[in-house]
Image (cartoon, one colour):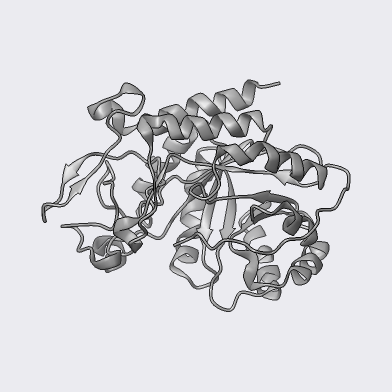
Length: 324
């Protein structure tokens, strides 16, 4: 679903490194696109690839809180409390342009996050008709929600010189671009780079990535995650196994060693791709389909395992706060 590989190569610019990222040391990607009939009139996003909620959903895992709506204020409050308890500083909300379902829920997500003392950023997705001009208008709109960080996913739909001209005009906001090519980020005059894709880009490249970003004068916000399994959502045969938490630890360890300015976490609740750390519970669906939980992660079982990845995130965010 989200793994278009960048093929643009540009030599990165040797300019002074920016100041360390202010405020957020860790950020987590959040998806406000889930809906249920009681709140939204229909199931939204749980039903991809032929799934038939509530009998089945398009994920290899099942939420411990059940199928939910991101319009539900009680759900949002609980989710933001979990993120805060995990020591994460910032919620990066997937946003698909004005008048999208995600835009309709944005104010509620922002309010719930702010009540927990979390900052909020936007993950500007490649919505139909996205251009440099529309993103400029988007940034002005998003700043009305108090956002000062914007993450641009899939930048290939806009020529890099147009990104550069836009970023030269913007003030009072930091713009991060999703790319593994630091030269692309420098050529587009972005403030920072992030990877998002934890399947293609593992911990082994993060040290080099952040070294290149610093040399290019960019902030480095590499992405870490627990694993990947999108077979039920989109039929992608590729799988990155969680290995009882070892995959997550390995990526976090690499990001810390790379001296990342911000560690971005893929993801809180991208259930389709199996990158989520939101609590999960093993179960058998009404149609007989098996769903995994997190049993075995760091030796935990049952109810304790449901929150295993949130608890481990708290361990790693504490390391970020205390590192020299």
